[in-house]
Image (cartoon, rainbow, N blue to C red; front, side):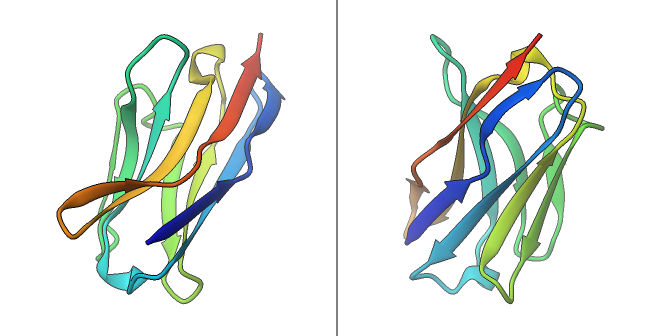
Length: 114
């Protein structure tokens, strides 16, 4: 599998960004997908996930602000991030599990200024 995330950048608190992740070399529609993030000096944490059937889960810290979605025709997963806070600053990673192993794409940096 190949996962390529994009859409990160610098935004002021209260602003928004939309992250995209293009997947290849998998039958995308059959895979659950997820976004993780890792802030400096902290462990990587799950932000949001979406099942192959479209069911979603969110970390408590982003509920009501972030929306995960997927486009099976385009082999892509998205993370709409609204009302961003400085504590959302992190490298965001797109991820899935393939053949029993969690796979990661290169991350995209999101920086939220106060």
